[in-house]
Length: 153
Image 1: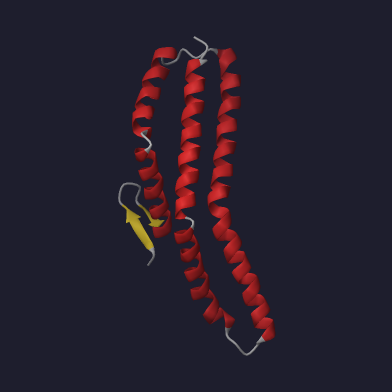
Image 2 (image 1 turned 90 degrees about the vertical axis):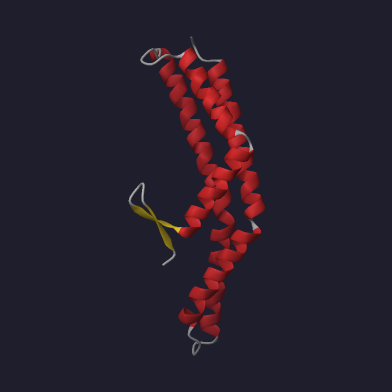
């Protein structure tokens, strides 16, 4: 019910994930990422033609790639922690409430409450998410530029 079908990949995608994907794409386009990507691909083919990668540079390059991927994990945590922490606090408060008032049906109250709180938090942190995405994309572009400038030719 809350999923959309992606005809290209032939899979169902959660609606919230699709929204975050669109926000990320808009941030990417708004900071000129598409222009940088085309320049970076062109520059990489100038510096290292296909099948001409030096064996000595591969280890250093893979170390930098691992560094970038670990940075992406940190960015994902920065985006997800506010919602996850809020839902965790709501779950704890519902557990305390169920102990205080056992006759109350917390299950029926809990699911809609968690959904409303999660959407409220996502709405509230949208400017923060856009800022984090923008900063991380800018940092990634600077890193790619640095790799291309210091590429062993």
